[in-house]
Length: 170
Length: 365
Image 1 (cartoon, rainbow over the protein chains, first blue to last red):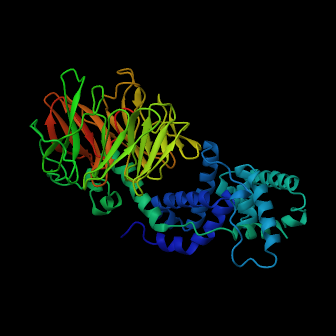
Image 2 (cartoon, rainbow over the protein chains, first blue to last red):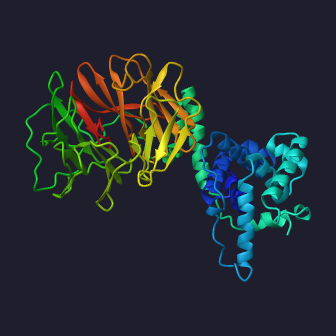
Image 3 (cartoon, rainbow over the protein chains, first blue to last red):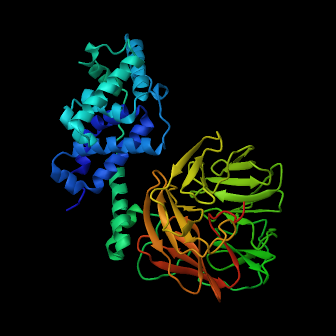
């Protein structure tokens, strides 16, 4: 039996969603590709065990978060802000300008956050993970998730008061 | 609009970054190099699957003749390289050196063993001649201009800087040839696909090796655990760390050679304290392969201790690492498969010669 059996199907099915997470974690297409491919490589190396664990997507997500933190520690990559954002797609129509402004504002604000705080926001407000699930992915306590999320939101509000009202985090 | 909605709006700008085939190929390679080699289980890594993922390595099997090389080379009278006709792909260049190595006469060698005398190439104890990785292009200099000759035809190009020529570096795929000139920071970058040469000055670095993308890897000298990747066209530099340390305690890392993908580097190691790292390269006791994407050490291969010395020179497609093995009575060209550890002597030359292999830069630049 091929030890990678099922891996390709998994990536084809979940690749788009994982790509979106990678993009939010990095804010840059090239870094997102590097991040996701490194995480997928790690996953492939341990595929039989990961597959048997029953949650390969969670494994990849955790690998991405850990790898992103590792990059930050090594300071290998230049942090990229809104300048690296893609132009709006062809579907952008009348409200395209507003959408672009919002995306740039959020990207710039996220780029100002420490890596762990950014990861907490992505996992909590994009992946819709619970605090306990987020803690598991990050390898920390629920209390740490709470404090990191609190600090991240406070910083976002300070960076972009117009963008993030109290209700906007709902 | 909530933060959740804003996040999804931002994520709509993502592309598809997932490539399962690339991930599996890389995983296969990591599994092989991180498990099979340290255990010495060479048999496990000889499957066609592994070899198909590492096309730059020579296939294993019974020792065979490699028809890209003459099995043996002897000193013989050789005609000068003809200027008006093609001679075909070269195998390598060697220099017949005086006993004190104060001068070496260069000779071009073809796969069938035929030799041609080359124009004099001034150097101190070596020959400043270079061959492209595919053996088609021969480069040499009179100390001022640099000449590039197409061995498949008669074409010859001349390049000149603002000062004397000092050396050359090829990218593993042969697309880029970087010439260095005597003045600090002056280089000519030749795109072999177009033949266009671009002169640059004030480049803030010197290429230890040149990648297939045209970037330069500037190795720490003395090695302190890192290297810079420099884009010579913009001057932009990124520093990378190699983790964990490439060598063991007491070992010193020499500048590396790039593998054909230019995604990994082969770093020779020798015991520190035995030689001056700035001037003497050897004796090399091991080679480690480093992933240039993340500085990860993939594998280590210890070289056998014998009465000779090992000199890693270049890595070529389908050939693995090419080393010179200098023994008391001969100089051998050896192909090394870093996965299986198998070595194949592909050519044997008289003792005391200097050998320039395809794709290897000049020894001094």
